[in-house]
Image 1 (cartoon, rainbow, N blue to C red):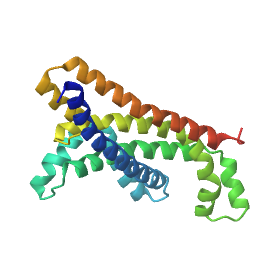
Image 2 (cartoon, one colour; image 1 turned 90 degrees about the vertical axis):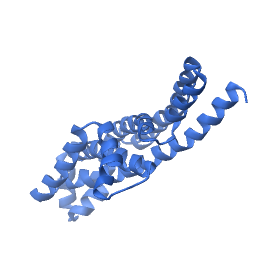
Image 3 (tube, one colour; image 1 turned 180 degrees about the horizontal axis):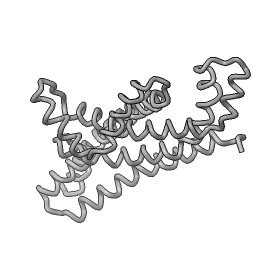
Length: 215
């Protein structure tokens, strides 16, 4: 098998792992981001304190250390999981913390008059949030959430350090076998760019669609 065929074969194997890790982590981060972001606005001080600890811990510590801790340390306490599960959980928890701050700040950016209008319409708090506040806040959140998605995608390269056979892991294996470093990592760079570009353009299109008619 020639070098190019070997390169294509190994990187295509890693591509699936990278895509799966990105999609599952992004879904987890988005769900956590909205839940925790809303809880950060709770009137209950205890709830705000608990979710605040989660946010500060995951924003204030290294993603790499979190990966190692969840994959290598938790088994010492009887909690064992596959490399893929550990990667998705860690990245999802990490970026969920960042996303929650985007959600919280987006909601707080909505003009106070919108809340008052909901009260005047006799909407419950949940109705005000669902019908008035969130539709406007999401438009504000999209640019920052898009940036977080790109950062999340790029962070998946770290999962190779916990033996998950993603693109970076496959490139490292191929480099150790062939020693053609320049060709391998140039190809890896191009692949990551080609994967990130549609995400960037997709978020820009989504932002434009959501803002149509609102200006």
